[in-house]
Length: 219
Image (cartoon, rainbow, N blue to C red; front, top):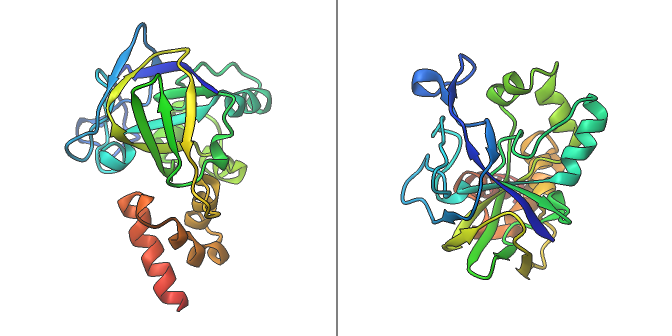
């Protein structure tokens, strides 16, 4: 399991975002050399030095400091869409290889490159900026149905990351709540919702609040 590329934003403006000024950082491209990763001190900021979050209301911050997506899932989308998809095109900071990202459990911890320690918190929920960027019809619906959302991670220990770094899973919780599990619950699988609370405080703040409401409603 390894990092295939570390991707940073090439900002541009678009009318398809609620961000002030229409700025988006969804166009991410592989960086040369190591990138420093730290925990953002406030919401709406990326954990990667040199990266940009255009819409701080929905992206970035301590619980969404880093976004990872699997090259294997990009390859499946390449086949379905009939077009090449470069690393970073989904707006991911880390394009990974050899990791079933949708199966990652909330609270799972990754040691990368010997120093950096990340913890999985939540899935990515597709938005209109993402759809407009890819220019694919019914993209939000199609992405949702595929159930391969990628994972947001918080930074527990800062460090550096570069292409080729190994990813070591140093902790994998015993609960059932995977990234895909939360994604399905958030996007309409109501039967799963009362069980999301099993992931506890490893969840991102928004998902934890939802999980607590779902658990209370089911009790």
